[in-house]
Amino acid sequence: MFAAGSTIGIIGGGQLGRMLAMAAARLGYRTVVLEPQADCPAAQVANRQITAAYDDPAALAELAAASAVVTYEFENVPVAAASILAATVPVYPPARALEVAQDRIAEKQFLNGIGIATARFQPVDNDGDLANALNTFNGSGVLKTRRMGYDGKGQRVFRNMESGGFAGVCETMGNVPLILEALVGFEREISVIGARAPDGNIATYVPAENIHRDGILRSSTVPAAVSAATADAARDATAKILGALDYVGVIGVEFFVLGDGALLANEIAPRVHNSGHWTEAACIVSQFEQHIRAVAGLPLGDPRRHSDCVMENLIGDDLARVPVLLTEADVLVHLYGKAEPRPGRKMGHFTRLGPLPSAG
Ligand code: AMP
Image 1 (tube, rainbow, N blue to C red):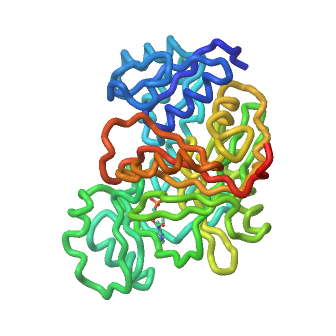
Image 2: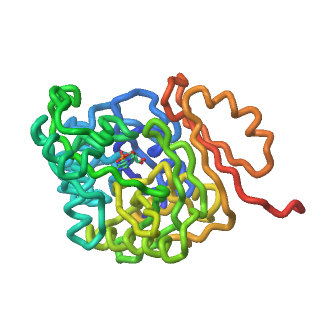
């Protein structure tokens, strides 16, 4: 256990790093952020920023020297950087989680290997592979980059394609390794936020139901409209993933829910997750505090919620909604300190709690 006053290193300076730094501060920890962009959202609330590339050897040495433990806010942290750090300081979650989450094929093989179902998939390295794979999946599928995909970037959907017409597709995807997934006719999308402590204790929050638009999360509603059996199965699968990775910290696991309530795991994120922002308003211990507790070796908090709620992202010009949201009684607004509201850019979010007692 790291005593209050210790420093937690955070790789990545976006809004997730910012919220981790805020949670760390409330538990008495100091934070140092490694991020190339100066005055990033996390550095605005952290004790210190090391302004350098994530794989800069001198910066990594500085981060290791300054930190009692190092964590990260995004899954594309170079595995080599995590390994260099891990030689001198504990790094949580473990490098194995990064390896699995950074490659969609390794991820699906890992999930299938521990008995968790996913969409069917095939590797695609050229237009001929794509034609074959689409043929196997009856002409429909979602083509994705194997690596470095986020918020629906690097994806293309095919529906009822006859053979042919694929010339040049792989080139437009950047001639990088790809994966074709069978197109899943899901009824809804849910996600589970789970945490595992170094002693093996696990806490999972109830699933949130997520709506995406243009590949970006728009809202998360809690509870999700699924049966108790489906909710339990999603939480059990999350716990199984945490155990299999010998994980420490918070993880986000996204699932497709089929018409019969069965689940297919879509993606795992080895970090705090946008679809878990609701926990800051509706639970005593948020996902951010839960992550800090786990990596600092403190006991995990109670993941129960005290309210139902809906979290909505404020993207680009949605920022104009803030003055009105601030006048609403049961709404918690959270802004990320980003200067320019560009289209598609996550500027903040808000969580509206379910009916609260009016008195007091
Ligand atoms: P991902 O980047 O894998 O999370 O995908 C972004 C979004 O695209 C998901 O949240 C789904 O809405 C949709 N999607 C991804 N994969 C599939 C699939 N195999 N079948 C149907 N929809 C998908």
